[in-house]
Length: 124
Image (cartoon, rainbow, N blue to C red):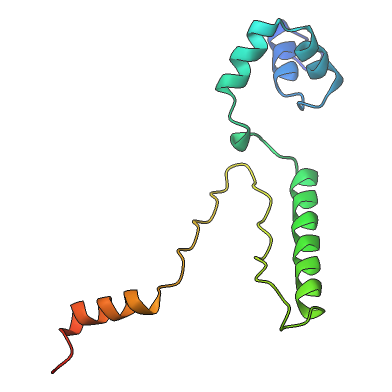
């Protein structure tokens, strides 16, 4: 294809790569029939969507701000009255697996049972 030559394929490629928030994509979504929108929403996988660099940086800024607020509240609360707040979870990003939830700490009774299974029952 020559530099000045425009084809229908060229136009289709341009349209397919428009960002979802563009006026053209918004107009196409608004003009779509309800059935088509319902079908598309059932098959949608937003966690696999593309994020621009600006969206990645914005999510990072939000995560950092939430971490700072958490650290500030922990540092400035009375240790005796402090409740067990969990640190903030990062904003989920497309293509990034969420860290697995940590299991609860083992109770003393469960640790005793496990110890006895490994080492045998206590003497006596």
